[in-house]
Image 1 (cartoon, one colour):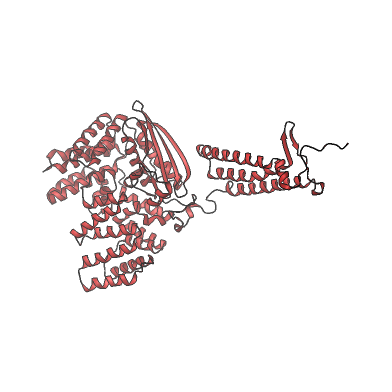
Image 2 (cartoon, rainbow, N blue to C red):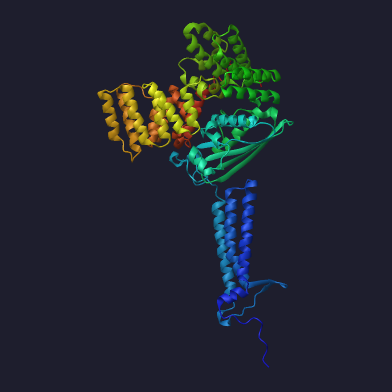
Length: 623
């Protein structure tokens, strides 16, 4: 009698053997398990600040493990008796060693590829092939998807508010972080006005980055309770074009240390993005005073009232600042802002009461003596002087001398020829923007910063229609088109400007024809070539051309070395146009260059009065 055959007939095809050995089943289980593992890795690894290569390596090893798992399922079987060698039913002629050799080969190849990937990604620093400091400016394209590329521009989005009551604290903290960050670095830091429209948005980070022309975006949240005197702030730094998480930071401090904290946050972000910061731009913690929490809350309310711009705002703000200095007499910024509120209130008065200047002087002297509010002190002085000049002409020369003498020789920022510092005080400081007289150009700037280009253009058009020879408005209108890379529109504005400012003369028509002849709408470089030619022609006629204008043209032509040389000249001349270094994207190709960083620090030292007039009184702030 013949021996019975096994239940499973010998397969006569390879695929039948594959099914018998459960290879498909093992492959399906592996794919499902690998997917779950990768999902967990995507959640867990960023929470522990793991580097980018960690998740990438996990993906590679899970992928390379698939052929190994399939090979193992062919050779071995997992059953009740444990892991056993699968009995082959294939004809003996196919060889018994073939599956084992295939398993060894697949495993060796996968292990080799995994080791090669790990050595390339994990063992080599991201910037080893090109140090960030040595990167060429041309590499600093804002749209680069490489997280290791130099970061030249950053945006801090509005902070999420997880606290009881209104979001006043979160909004003001957001403003302070932006201000401090722009002071500490040569990065272009997008203004609060420009990012405010993203407070509630469903746009993706790469879309926001493209609109703002930045590489890095900061998001975060503020958590506190009304009963607590502590605050918890969480920040995430993201490489926006590639939508890649770079770093997470968290701080928890008592409210009395809030002034130190907002500077610490800016310093930590700047250090992550630009590396070690110079000691000359980073204030020592002990130089930043603590503040009473109630005084700080009153101070924030006062700032908000001034920001509203309503007729009753200055008086209401003054009440809040009174409360702030009453709660904390060492709060220097509250003293300076109280002086600013007094000056702002003068806009509603027909004449200057005799005692107002005395009160302003007392507040500013106190702020200057305490230290830490130098920008605010200078700003109030500049705005007050401008008011006196506009409303009373030279009748208050004696009073101006008295004001300056109150602050000693250190108050050089008030010299009439130092237009860079005066413009910085009026336009770039928080207090200056709140105290500045409303003007059409101010409204245009707000529309511009908010990305409302059509409204900005309409405002500028109204200005040049009313005053055809108003060159600053023409320049702003041309720059507005350049910001949108509309070179044809910029050329049209320049043609109109030439005819409006020079009149319908032969020289004006010749200049227009020269511009039309040199400009090719299909080649934006021809615009900059004409602008360079025009600057040279002006210089040959004996006209003075701003070094910042020459540098700007050099950047447009790709002559970065020439641009840096002109910017160095502009710093020596204290050119007011240097303020454009802070916010204009045209300088982004230079921001990764260490020479540009040095120029920007020197310029900031000029307009912020570092060094000899670090304190308004020339006295050392108390420790």
